[in-house]
Image (cartoon, rainbow, N blue to C red; front, top):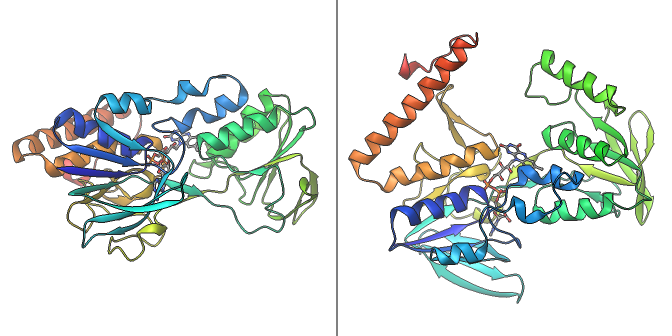
Length: 350
Ligand SMILES: Cc1cc2nc3c(=O)[nH]c(=O)nc-3n(C[C@H](O)[C@H](O)[C@H](O)COP(=O)(O)OP(=O)(O)OC[C@H]3O[C@@H](n4cnc5c(N)ncnc54)[C@H](O)[C@@H]3O)c2cc1C
């Protein structure tokens, strides 16, 4: 069996490794468009702040370690197209600019997300960045070490923006958050975000809520951010306003996607096309409490990547997997109940 994997970080490499553990014979090839494999992006804010100065600590397994497990990985190789009729992908080697095709028996898509950069005037000025990849983390670490970089504006009060607030404060910067909504960390309830906002302000961070960015200004390099309420000095701007599934290259492949571009999968990570699977931030995920698909782009969801294997396991093993999953969920619900959380058991488990 020949498995092709697109993307080389959390979901995809979990799936490749799991398959190797269960099938020593399978041919496994990974195409990753970036320069790094299998790293924990969750550690990036602590790398930027200097709590960890060695980026290698964020890498779970190197290319050499995957090679030892007979998993072929190709870095700086972007998959441009998937032809599900021919079971073929078109790949561009970004270093040599050469394009070639490769075939598969089974395809796992784990291409994650790309950060949204709204078309603000001035968005192409120097020192305006996003934080998504290890490469982004390295750039932000370098810029934030420059003595002339004192005023940092963070656009977006989601979890990435707020984690970078902490990093920039640790580096002694003057930090301001501009957030369009009335609260930061929107998925949390107000009683929680009130506490977070107080803590942030108590630490000397300016929190501009209910305020919209209109443009970035500067001469070559950014020097200020203009909003609908004011203009603020900025030597460095982080734009952290959300992510979108990185699935544009699948257009025309016949693989079904939701309105936001997330690949629609069943509970065993199958797409609507036979032999094609998807996992991680590029796909929807089955929400066990709501009992329907949802979109939750968080690292914790990558564990679902391993679950796709049930799709190719024998029936008896599938049943064991289900049993284990249900028991795990029940224990979680019971332990939450013990801590006083109201019971919200999925219908099928009651
Ligand atoms: C700063 C930061 C902090 C975070 N903190 C947390 C946290 O505390 N807790 C948590 O649960 N989650 C956190 N996350 C989210 C977590 O990192 C992601 O949910 C996780 O990395 C998703 O894994 P993935 O494999 O689905 O996608 P990704 O990690 O995005 O990997 C996808 C890979 O696919 C590659 N790719 C994309 N398109 C192609 C293509 N066409 N061809 C070849 N390769 C392609 C990309 O280059 C990328 O390397 C954080 C993320 C960031 C950026």
